[in-house]
Length: 264
Image (cartoon, rainbow, N blue to C red; front, side, top):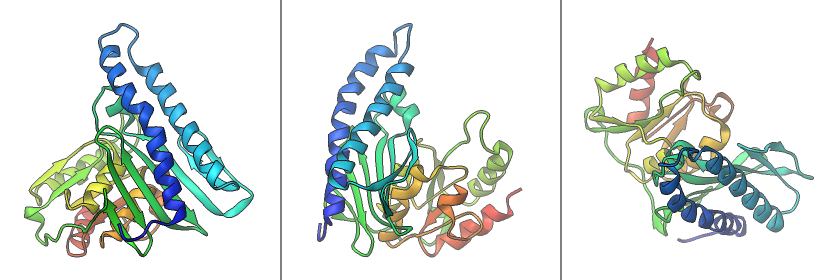
């Protein structure tokens, strides 16, 4: 990798440290799947422990920075210009079932702009990182978004609304509209990794509604730095506020946006 800022180096170290216990947890989860008690409490504790490790490590290296996290919510620090946005386990349901597709997601915001990102899957040791203006990388390999121009050749990723959450009818309308135009659609269950896979050219695009900032902040920067296009589902730039996101390359983005906006 050509450039790693001191802040990104801190974020990588924190993600790797927090990820080591999760690797051990995966083995334990295999046993808990067949127990009467089940793994839910175990996973809740793992989630909280991971966020605690991340905050401890990041705060030690960058005292005064604020935090926005899934477990702890918003914590304002003395330094009002910097904030870490963290998801300790993105893909918790996968993790709950012992599926090795989940990630620790960390983004650094400086004066309201995303400047550094880490998406780390401890189970595979895949480390996706990005620096604003310096590109996106997977394990030191430079990433570039896929170059496909035709929707009928494209494979997309999306997320299905959880039971009782989101607009299921609207999602089904969007799914039906997109399915008739593309080669395939995948649902892997971790938005940060879906976005990282778009940056790596594994998926051609990703869309979803009603996501939290910690679900998408790091992945958003990865796509941008891999020369992709990211917007909300009205074509604007308010992804972190609305929770609605579409990520693709330059030719596919307007085609998909038109389809999604027309879906009723």
